[in-house]
Image (tube, rainbow, N blue to C red; front, side, top):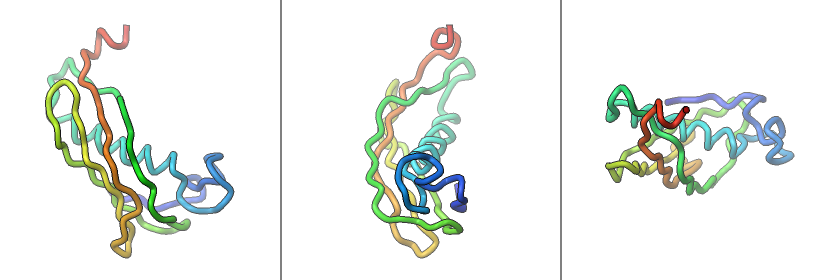
Length: 112
């Protein structure tokens, strides 16, 4: 998925810093959303996934107006899904990389 950094995505707006660049919480949310989308096709209708662990390195700043493409690739399948995740800016530089784990759960049982 491709995102363009807005003022609402900055560290200032998110309370995670005091500079007008992509905030780590927003970057993590974008990466996590990509894992949710990637997991969806592997699930039965009664299943969903929940986040279990995030290990991400935010490597470089991205200014307002900058473009970021996020990727998630499943590396471990089963009840616990592990994804390699990355974010790359419009100049081809790595903004972030790491892993995100999600656990497959029964939707009804989990939300009770």
